[in-house]
Length: 120
Image (cartoon, rainbow, N blue to C red; front, top):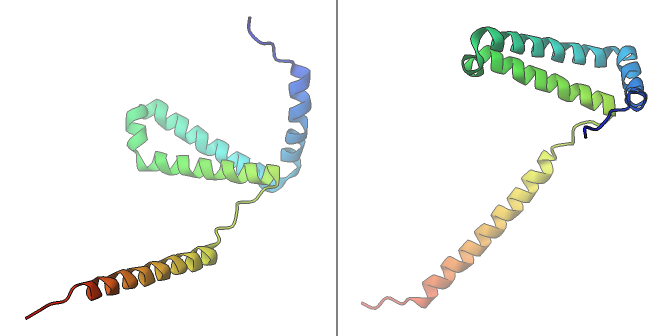
């Protein structure tokens, strides 16, 4: 038996989102841009076919644009921002690992030299 969707519950959940979109200009702009990109992609797929459209650079650029706008819309809607990349932390950690590897390699190589004695 198919599950019935209660429209009153769906309306309760969607109403705050719709109100937020209508009041926030930046959010509305991101949503409109994503929708326009999706329309462009759909029309290109309908006219050229899926295989030809998938290899078209303009279509792939529109897909990237639509995905970016949807991500920005979702971030704006939920209030979450993208996490920091921590570039300095990664650089310092990489330097420590590289230094430790260099020291370990130096010890291994110096130990190998002492074990072998060359006689003439």
